[in-house]
Length: 337
Ligand SMILES: [Zn+2]
Image 1 (cartoon, rainbow, N blue to C red):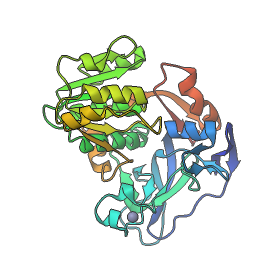
Image 2 (cartoon, rainbow, N blue to C red):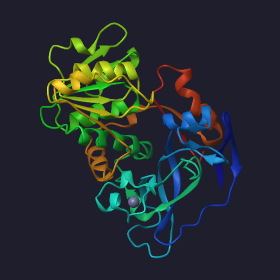
Image 3 (cartoon, protein in one colour):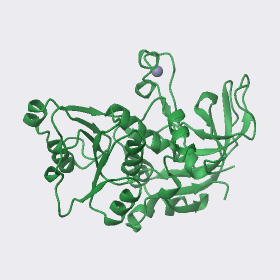
Image 4 (cartoon, helix red, strand yellow):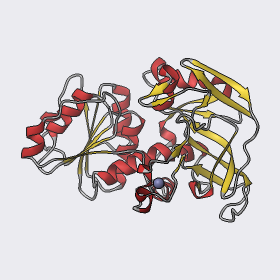
């Protein structure tokens, strides 16, 4: 099979590799679509993210969907030909975090496209059968791949306890911000304010359910007429994060999703006097059933986010599309082409 391999910063080539064979409890998936994530672009640019360093050739891509191509020994829950969305991290399922239901915090997680685990910019991938989630025909291949970033938004809304009548502020209208807007609406939020510096993305946010948008170049979220109860911080920008925390209502909740600066100036007196909750999020757990239900029912539109489609041998173009075109939101690679 062909796989797109990152050999070092700025160096991606297509290589011929053996088709991976599923072991016990696993399935092989013929990959139809893979979304490009900011983390893929970061590995491409810098060869590392924090403590994860690309030391040997790495296949990028962790937002994948396709159809089951082969079953490993003992797998009876899936059938060859079934369309599935791949949940790209397989935890050990035995540690205290896994047993508590927080498998996203498993210290032994094997996650796609995180050194040394290969990802899905390839014609086939192997995954544990329990993490290959069947999707209905109403969900496209691209949307099935983007159930992964949608899961980040679902997890963020759960962490922020977004519910009926919630007033939500989403800072950053990139792909994660835009799925978070849609999840907040699906969860019953009635005020969804979105801030960004990119007018095209703010317009899309409005189309996808934002009730108000703030152009952060000219306006401040601290001037909103009603303070939000929940912040879904998706920009990763330290100054924007601090200001958004200041915008929260008493007893508000700040969910830090975006990754950017490693440290930020926390307005501590605001956190204390308003009894704010500030929490991180790391990936997700148990989100695929909700994601499939919401997209299958038409409550969330993921196809709308796709602004570009690339062949496997164009992976480099796909990885750099975001910086070349300010109207780019989400691009996908189709490894069979
Ligand atoms: Zn575990």
